[in-house]
Amino acid sequence: MNDSFINNKYNRRKIIHVDMDCFYASVELRDKPHLKFKPVAVAGSSQSRGVITTCNYIARKSGIKSAMPSIMAKKLCPNLIFLPVNMEKYKTVSNEIYQIYKCYTKIIEPVSLDEAYLDVTNSKYCNGDPEEMARQIRKKILDDFKITASAGISCNKFLSKVASDWNKPNGQFAVPDSEIDKFVLNIPLKKIPGVGEKTLLILNKNSIKTCKDIQNTKEIDLINMLGKYGTTLHNLCRGIDDRIVEVNKISKSLSVEDTYESDISDIEECIEKLNILYLELISRLNKPQYLNRSIKSCFIKIKYNDFKTTTSQMSCVEVHYEIFEKLLKKNNSSIQKPIRLLGVGVQFNNNPNNQLNLNIL
Image (cartoon, rainbow, N blue to C red; front, side):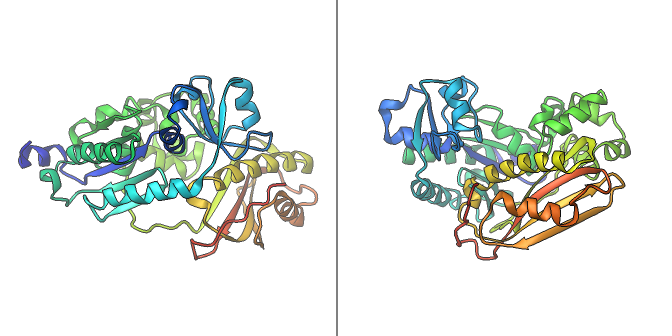
């Protein structure tokens, strides 16, 4: 492929998103080939408090997915084989795969142990062809580690991430500049970052079911429906994403929040919602990119129906539910104003090598 053709396909940035296929499960099955054709899940525990970290595609056919309680997964697939998490092994493999990325670019943003963004805009390898670079990276991972990876290639992080899921497992998909307008029309709304069940429900209630529907909706109307995320959605559904690939990006905090269809007016309902948010926060804290982080505080966010927002935090070294309930009751022993949004989160210490302490009660 000649240079002029490549440049015509990608006049802007060239971003590759590499996403390992069922990473933890793939590493385990590589080392336990006798389980290759059986449903397998990697989980902290097979008991009621355990949560599925990942599973192979055979298990996924039974409806099992990441962050699902182990006891629920067992009901869906009684013959499911549980394997314990071996984080040190996964880190070792991830670090070695990272060395492959460095052969093609120094601008790398690891998202977690199993995925990363690579900015290859100025890379001279493969005559500057990002699609060939992705093919070589995936082949090298397969040859060296006997596991598969998928990749997406486009001009920004959003499009490359969506594209990496297009031909999974063990595939890749490219969205050149000339095909962006057509491609975004086929993206399911649930594949867009930030569009969860609640947001999807709001959009559907407003007769918005496709990216084309969003393109036909005024930005101000999206903002009225979804707050400032309306602007983000307005841009993403046009294939616009100006985020750069950030080298050594370290998150300072992690939070989970939810905006409710009906305002919360009593403390009992508030506590019920708080517990759901807490469990979601714990699930996210169990993801690989956070397991080596220690915390310095927990916080809670409350937005009332008059859109006034209050936050409260407490210094701590462990994460458990009682902290958040205490923060909630600190200023809301009785609900004075209806609440439309609740959020819980943690702030991390600056040193990413300190171990996160999860005390799940």
